[in-house]
View 1 (tube, helix red, strand yellow):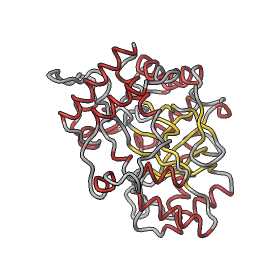
View 2 (tube, helix red, strand yellow; view 1 turned 180 degrees about the vertical axis):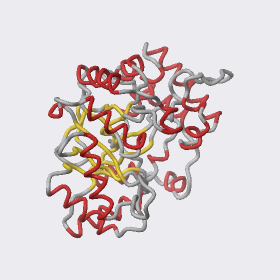
View 3 (cartoon, one colour; view 1 turned 120 degrees about the vertical axis):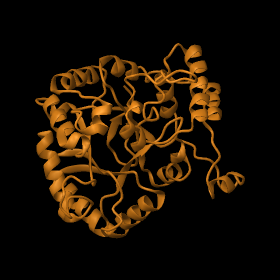
Length: 344
């Protein structure tokens, strides 16, 4: 397993981590992802550690906290062998202060996650979304305090826009507070918006990408093709799950899958392995979160590492997945001397 630096900090993480959105199956959204129990989760952790994958990603809202609890049980007795990343910010109760990134909420959220996970520290704690109500100084001051007292080792954000992240980094620098070193962002061959603003920002500010839904919300499994009905097991069969995820035009999806098929045939790899390997060659990517309903899916996704696509194969996938850019990015693209594209 390859390890990379997490952004600009000194901490190294494996290039793959296991996401726990399938753990628990609580609620309509997470039931569509999977219903992994403690025994199954323990087996998946065993397989991950045997392959060198030691990082596990979760969140307090996954199955109303059950995912954190199940992960905590699955890693019991081997906390020193794993890296835990979790997230908070989204609503966890009915009260007016049961969400967000206020000092009041974050301290409670971190303590609750620690208890569910059965640990006294979190390796990487990420804000699940931007809180536009709470002052950025309050947010980062609280996270800095949690780092200083040892409950959190490193901090990151998720689902921030470029200005959210840059403003936060500027506040950290101004007041000498802990900086975000990771940005957990959606990025895939059928969702390349990350490249326009967040990738150049990540390169400039040394913020590493931790990629969620690298297979386009279950679309790049190799089972969805032009003229073929959705598999019965696909999360896209659930309207709740379909609506909650990124939207992808059918023609773009089919074009990308056809290119993936061609590369998979040439390399002897599977469609998901090729899609994941493409991401591993992109600038700023520190880690990719893979999901697995079962052992077979996990083992297949683990096969994305240990090899590289050729430049010609990368170019083929780049071309198939290209879409018109939003302003001002299409305009900037015409002036490469002033705005060169990101290079890792």
